[in-house]
Length: 343
Image (cartoon, rainbow, N blue to C red; front, side):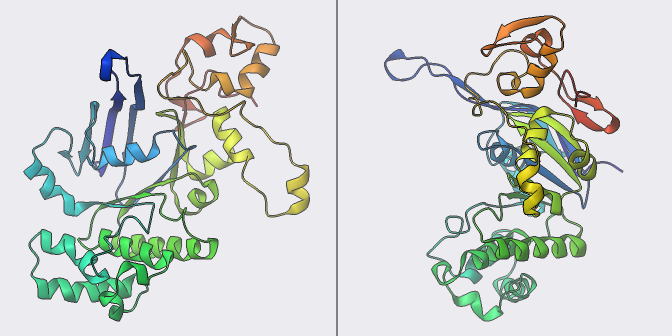
């Protein structure tokens, strides 16, 4: 069976060229050569620090912004490069839920009008759309009577439910969820995540779930991809990635997740990256994680050829060769690391 979504060599660059008065503008490689597939009914979790390119990738997949290079295929059809009319025909099958439940809804429209808008825009009669709005509100756990209310009359969790109702109004095959619960309280997060699971079980929709909370991603995902400075550095089935991470960046992210047991939390070792995330406008040579990589320093201390970089002696491959995603252990487990088997 062919994949629902196929992404190949996707890139997005911002800036570059000359600014006012001839000053050079740095080129930002926000997404830098990403490829993956997504099956029908699957959830792919996409995690990474702020600035890693996750949200940009989500928008590229739906062609809300134009890619600089690469291609996207959805249900066997090209998404990149097609006309506006062809893209409009695909829109009912590809939807998005945005991070901010306060800023993503038009304050001048009622909840009913917000949910009905995509249906009427694609030719559904108003009476049928009104009936569908009542059904969708009930489906996301809200009263149909709330259709007459405006966004400011809802809580954050209720607003996100309205955003989800709008996204599933046209029975999409794919929904990109951009940090859908990060602005919500923990108890409300659980309600929204359970709602998404119910929707997926009922309709078979596929989710690209973007988040920085690894606990949330573990709860909802079938596979997980880890991004760092525009690249996917590790991708694997959920249990394989959480049980035996192969990239040092993934190891450090998992090390930062708190444990529910206070005694274990106090005594467990931490593996922290060095410094802060770099800039996509000034990428280092070789592996882009090497300036922060604890593993590179450990490997260098064991011997082998090293070079001076990032204020330390580091293995030459880490500094000079950009690693590609390659099998690390099981075939479905991929990591972009020169030393994936190092503990």
